[in-house]
Figure 1: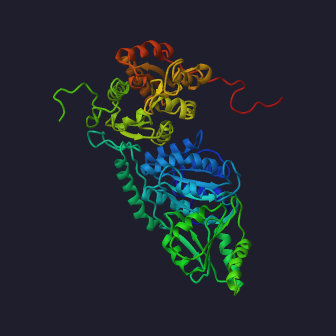
Figure 2: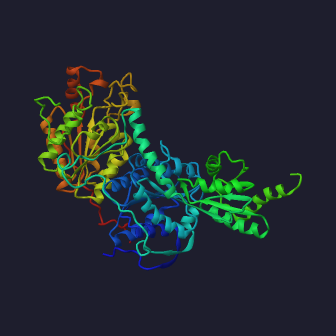
Figure 3: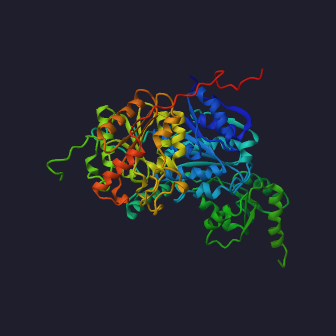
Length: 369
Length: 262
């Protein structure tokens, strides 16, 4: 049986969902367990077709709870496993992911954001920021990548499997319906051929030897009897997360070094921000863009440096202040004015970026503003 | 220091976590003794993964010298279904209460039975949510008093008491093993569990064993009343024995393709 799905560099023109399926294959994912929901279902469709050719597995479960928990079962067994969901499915997915957070289970979850609350739309939003970064009854001890174009969907899906197993935190690719459904050119490759590191998986239960005789039994729990017991266990996880955070955090800036007007956006909105900044620069306005690539852990230091040099920070998002709240917290203590542009469930164009920045630029240019 | 004479325990019981944490008079210890002996006698200690639900069953998380995973309320079956698919050489045992199996995790039970997942499921049925303080469960008997049915379970309001093995048998595939035992019939219960393990190991099928059990703490009963409730009320409402899975319905015209119009 063929084991390497991709040899050499393969140029392709495909939808984001297809890119993700290929990336998971290339990353060596053995298992996908999933449940249909728009706009991510085609990840399953492609996986279900491709997986048997490369000896990988698939199961369509009864709901997202089962998709999440079966994925955790595969992870416990030592397999590289993932699932994908969206919107109301992401809500249900928080239960298994909360267990993954507590027990340090490196599950990978692809989120294709759709409109909300509730069933919302099946199309697009950035409204699953809070849920994906901080969902569950815990502390947000997870890794969240927000790719912005198809090459990144491929690169960061590959990377998500590595990061998950290296640091043992549940890891998300936070995409959206636009990215899922549109076609773009992308280069597919095998990570080993590019010399990229892929952290090995290992079984957490069912390890060799007779438990109690050759080795202690593995006893994994998520329930503690006393407050202090939980506190200590959690402290260990929080310390591990904080230690790993600087190694994981990623960001991208565009003409931000000398920017007076700093636009902060993530995901596809960051593409509009970048193009808007280019147009603004052409018009003589010193604009720049900052994009957190990891939303958890957040690249705080770099954003603070750039924001502290700006006259205005403008947060643009397809949600109603979810990113803005995060940025406010990350910039706490700086005196730079922070403005928000909130378009829940609606896309943002470069023209809107230009228009919004110009409001502040014009105002500060006017002598009596 | 351990006492000079230990009570008879299966070797696979973990001494460090004994005496166990279940209430006096609780049936969990008996079920777990049957399971421990069955795993040992079948020589499965090396490759068994035990998973417990939330509810009183969570207390079994360090009970055995077996690799053990504590999961969420109702979610033990999907965890093991996902695990078993990628490690078929392992023997997986899902341990849960009647609330986890028949209420919050009912969809997983139905799906696993439908797929014939090779998992041995043990459901301890004591007719109440015990860990949370004795609320009504799907299995609470008609007229039975609980914290949420203080005047007794009214069938008109809450429906009749749910019978798990009968439900599972009605959707299980041929070859699956379904039985109901009781902590009042220890040898029979152990035999059911052994058969249930063999159905998974030898046949690759789902095995579902409900164990009728006692909860004097929430029933507010003394020893005699506890046993009487189990043997007189519960045994009558929940018949003990093995339940043959309903045969798959033979489709006329053959196959899964929709019939063509002639």
